[in-house]
Each structure stands twice: as C-alpha cells, then as structure tokens.
Amino acid sequence: MSESAPIRVMLVDDHAVVRSGLSAFLMAFDDLELVGEAENGLQAVQRAAAFQPDVILMDLVMPEMDGAAATRLIREAHPHIQVIALTSFREDALVQAALQAGAISYLLKNVSADDLAQAIRAAHAGRSTLAPEAAQVLIQAATRPPVPAFELTDRERDVLIWMVRGLSNNEIAAKLVVSPSTVKFHVSNILSKLGVSSRTEAVAFALQQRLVE
Image (tube, rainbow, N blue to C red; front, side, top):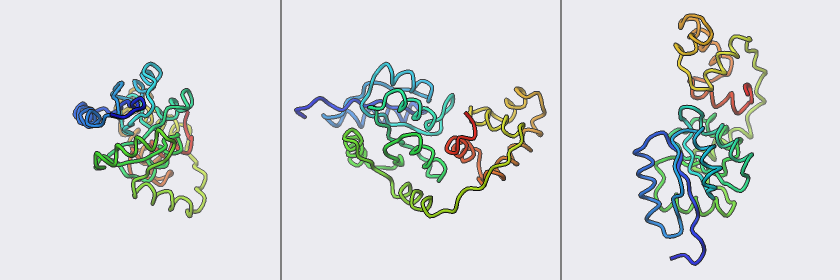
C-alpha cells in the first residue's frame, strides 16, 4: 500500500463498458482511486467541480460536449486537475485540439494497464505522456507551413457551430429551417475549406483554431 494518499481519478467516456473496464483497471492499483465518472463532456465539467479529482481520463468524441471543449473548461476553472486524453482516435486535429485545450497527455485506448497507470502517476506529477502517434503529430505541426485563412460564409459558420454541438444534418436543418440537402452542401464546403476529411476532424479543427465559440 502506498504511504501517500491515492491519486484521485475520474473517468469520462460515453460508453458504459469502457468506464466499467477502466474502473476495474483502477482497482488493481493501490495508489489509484476512482472518485467519479461522467458520460459526456458537459457532465465532466460539472462533476470535476464536485469530485475534484487529481487526474481525469477524458474521451474526446462524445455527445453534449466533446472532450477537448470539456478539457478547456475544466483546466480554466481547476488548473490543478490534470487531463489525460484517452481515445480510440488518432486524427491529427483531435491530437492538437486536446493538447491545446490543456490535456497533459494523449494516449490511445490500446495502451497497456501498466503504461496507463504510469501515465496517471506522471500526469499527477506534472509530466506529459504521449502516444507515438500523438508525438508525431506535434512534430509534423512544428514543421507545417502556416494555415491559410478560412473564408467561411455566415451560413457555413452557423452550420459549423451546430456541428461542434454534435447535431446531425437533419437536426441542423431543423434549427436553420433549411433542407437536409442544403446542410449537406454546406458541410461539404466546410470540410473542403478547412482541409479536413470528416465531421470529427472539422469539429476538432474548429475548436483548435477557435473558429467558433
């Protein structure tokens, strides 16, 4: 048993089976303690304030509010809480969005239990742990030419705002009182102008570049 108090950990993931697996993992280590769970970014922000964990394991792609946005709000309100992005996705834009939001580490969910435990301990001590894929993204970003200006129209910016909030094309169409095909057209233009290939990348990139509030 560790002589010092255990590291307080909170889990944030929209899949109950993932939270269950991570909870079982934490129980195997005497120096780690599960203090709370959340199933989306909005809950994470609220429960981080209530539970005051030392470290949060944060999924990135979730409903209500994504992990990068939640990370930014939590770090602004509670600078002592360290956030580890733990996700299945390795897209460049997600890596950059998470780290720029204030996550200290970025790991993929195929990480071993021992490596994850070490990453939690490192985060608690203020040290970063990056999956090789995440480290490569940072290297590439450092050598990449400046991003050109994004000339989104007002309507495309409106669509992007609702994309960031997790709405589908049909839901966005209802909000903007236009047809789903019109929204699909705008989404296609947005992806092209931002130079990304998926909605997930567009959302992460928009948050990273602060294209929307």
